[in-house]
Length: 378
Image (cartoon, rainbow, N blue to C red; front, side, top):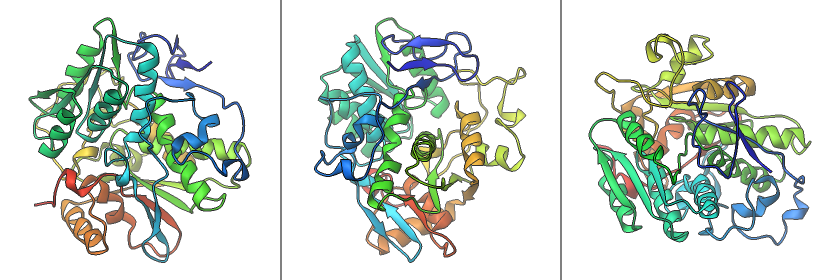
């Protein structure tokens, strides 16, 4: 049976508990999980047309909370760059991949309440899947979140808490609520079940490309949930001999909010000292911050991601790198994709801005949120 384990100090907890972080260091959990069986392309024939077709490599099975998520199209955009259209998910973003795992786990644990925090897309996804699972849900979002996203959260019946301040103030409010007994914290950052949902993004690539992967996989990175899911999947596929090499992971951040890119370029294993407290440990409770930098890519505007060490290690291990994009590049990329037929929100165009002109290797970018969620950049 899967178990929570802290990557920092080895503390363990049962996954049937509502303990949302390591009680010793208050850091995020990893999941100790070994897939029961290996996949093969032939074994997938005739299976359900959702991410649950990869059930044997997932820590949950036989779901009742599903909305048919997954199996989004992969479209060739240029000779070397393809786009995976994850904005065609039920709630119009890739966050459905992880949210369905959290809601299904919560349904089995029967908590008194579910809470989540988000800059928008994770909140809309958790709200939708909690509605599907008939779970009471409260979603915390920062002021300034796109009105279309807050409207969607309310439409799914979740209680919406708009928090004055930035994304870190929102996380602090949600984590205070998560400490109330009987609460399941549907955190896309702290709960590793979310990462095992996002890893299906790469399993789908592997299947659609006939048992191989591109030279590189580009992902937008804030809290790093898609990147860490991709790292899990490539490691699993390689360990089982289903791919002969692991693709480079290309992590993309907005130049205005790029703490991971700065740490990577400095050769650091964690965030740089300016982003850490004096003891060097990033706590679960966010640090007080000065005036927040802003970016059109609101979904990746995360100044202190709790899984920073894991993200940096995953990119280095893959032979990948970090790239940053400016606000002007984000605006131009959104219009360029729209001219090609893809209307994508501002966070979702970051990877196209970074690697859309590549011609020397094959790369896949995720178009991970619908343009209707934010509208065109000003």
